[in-house]
Amino acid sequence: MAAVLNYEPLVLSPRRESPALTPIQEEILALKRERKAVILAHNYQVEAIQQVADYVGDSLGLSYHAQAAQADVILFCGVHFMAETAKIVNPGRTVLLPDLDAGCSLSDSCPAKRLAAYKAAHPEAYVVAYINCSAGVKALSDVICTSGNAVRIVNRVPADREILFVPDQNLGQWVAQQTGRTMKLWPGSCYAHVQFTVRALEKVRLQFPHAPVVAHPECVQAVRDLADEVCSTELMVKFAKENPANEIIVLTESGMLHRLRREVPGKTFIAGPTDTCACNDCRFMKLNTIEKVRDALKNLSPVIEVPEPIRAAALVPIQRMLDWSRP
Ligand code: 13P
Ligand code: SF4
Image 1: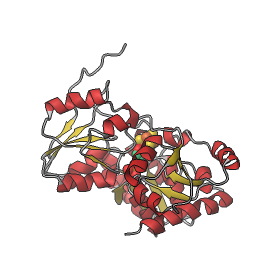
Image 2: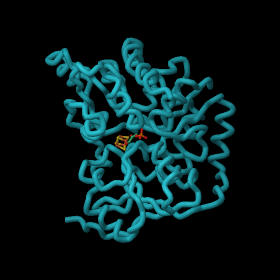
Image 3: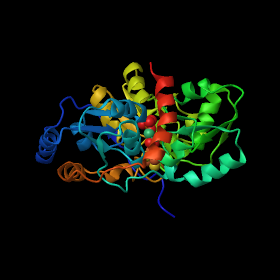
Image 4: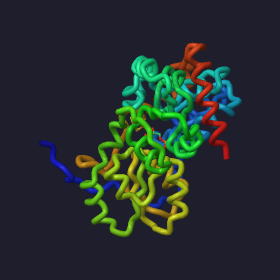
């Protein structure tokens, strides 16, 4: 059996100055100008990618920015469903993803064919789909949500409709608790977030007894119940700014710590540990490297394409989400 809980926590302490750009990062900025590109990056990307991005954020912020982008090229540093969403909302741009294998276990847990079969058997279901799903699943859904707006979106669904929430059962369970709405939950989960355990959290809390805990809603309920705040990655930045504590334990993918350290420079962030590791990397997010970002801009590849009938059908529930969640 693997050794458990045998590690030192990953702690990012305040760093006042941004590190200088490396030659490859400089090359990317030059290529970006040449290609008339914009770089959008998710909070889970490595620090070197976050540093060259025009915008770094959560799935909701990235969707708005993708839709508003005027550049010829959107280089999307995240996973496949995110780049696909950018193409759906802004089809006139060339959308690039540095590594086409950057998928998502959660998205894979809900194949469009299985959702179509469910809908055929339950035509009355109102499908609320977490954005972590394929374009094919979005095309079959009534409205999309992200972790940042899921409560608001579910609250807008007509009260007489029976909701099927896909594909994340943990986020769905949390939203049901927040809204009081009964929902059927698709049995999917994020392989990375379910690795956070009560045992590992208790261990790190002994070392940082005064640090509040902020957790992503994709964590299991037993872990969420121990958190001081449960929210999307973007709202974690707000929490870190507003909470008076100087040390904060962060239960989500480890790339988030770079964003937090940059935006909240005076504080110390402790990566949420798992039973076997001091931090939690999403293996899909981490397929994107700074070299692949450079190569994507150089070669204008790999390109994300979505067949037009699926794109047009998927845009409807995405647009509904954007309209329902506009501040
Ligand atoms: P956010 O939208 O909160 O950034 O979450 C995206 C994600 O993939 C979480 O695993
Ligand atoms: Fe998917 Fe989980 Fe990775 Fe997010 S962290 S992209 S939900 S596998």
